[in-house]
Length: 71
Image 1 (tube, rainbow, N blue to C red):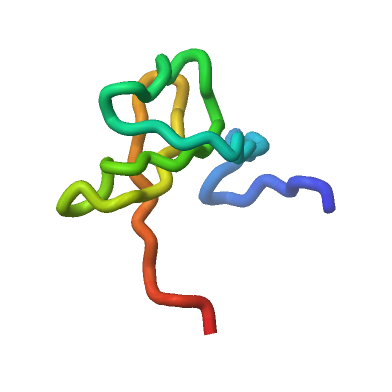
Image 2 (image 1 turned 135 degrees about the vertical axis):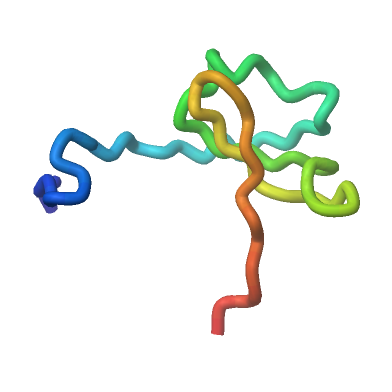
């Protein structure tokens, strides 16, 4: 399916996201610049140091909130 710009985002082109299947703790997360648009498991980055997913925008790492189970 081709990307079609919208009025809300006429110049935004989605970037592919890649899951690397790697796990890190906060102390060993690699440089975000080297992992742009990558998702990793952060074993102690979530609420109360729980495991979470993290995504890099090329500048920093951001947690991805995990919600309820898929029904």
